[in-house]
Length: 493
Image (tube, rainbow, N blue to C red):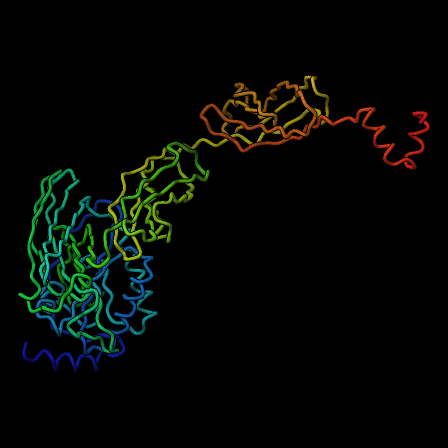
């Protein structure tokens, strides 16, 4: 270890084109891997040092991405030249190659070096999106942090195993400062954000199917040399990784191998940000048809009244990313079209403007059938008529699947035909109606098939024109004594 500094300095000079400085290596061996379930919050572990020139670009990219709030991730910054715990972890756990390095989800993706903030943002965005899209084990972390005064906090952590088999892995709970109070600056003179201080937990877990692991610890900052920490500037991040081995490389594609175990869940408590929003309530249709657009409602309330963002998993392998901001406590309607038949479970989580996140909602299920709705009906009949007289109207629609069709006519006068039928696809249906007043009426007709898929409305106008009474006509002629001479002559006025 006493020779590490000259090695690092020499490595920076050799690897300046990469934007990374090299460290010593170790060896590993090849084993297998598997994967299980849905989306999650990605975890970035950022290895850096105050003397590293390129690290300021990586640091700037992470701060901008986090502030923008569009990607589902959190990160912890290991300032390795200032923290012996950080240095030991990055070296022993990840076989650190050089600074800056970002290990995502335990090594699922690795980004080394940074030439600019823009290029680093692009690289990290790609890695985060790939992490969020991958399948993970079905486990859920609950993290509660209570500030007890001074520099002491109580950290309660639990993991629910929703899998059908025992879950073996490791729980890590990272204590970090949102902005370093220790004077840990990057090379550009910016205090490091999410600066790691210590592990509250870093231990193996084995949780039976359907079971729960839980533990609690009181952590005192001053006892670890951090007497300047405050409640408002403290954040706690918890992540659990499974025990399925993967080959990782801290200098991809094949250098500095390490044993990679991928993260399955990650949650964060920001002590200065208040409470997270409520778990969203998801509403909307439960049945639908391929190719149609449907509106779903998402409702979450933030205790502090902050605006909320939603992250929606549509259940078909796609998600919305973080969208918003939306007003707290107001139902937000978002549309979705499904292009394949199936059963889809829609889930959502919310976060506020302080990046405090709720848990995932219960699933809202919609069953999409391959059935297609009938065409908009064509309407045939007289366009004019008299009150008190019954008139016949014909409707015709075709169903793409050849299903039988029902018709619903709205006569425009507050009455309707209710659903009538069934009729064969393409066969004309008829209905009679009589209006009691004189006006212009818009007739609307829609069709549905025997699976319940409805068309849009077809429209048709029918007018029952108003007539002018004899007394009204005399009043008009008296008002204009020199007008309408022919009418006056005919009426002998």
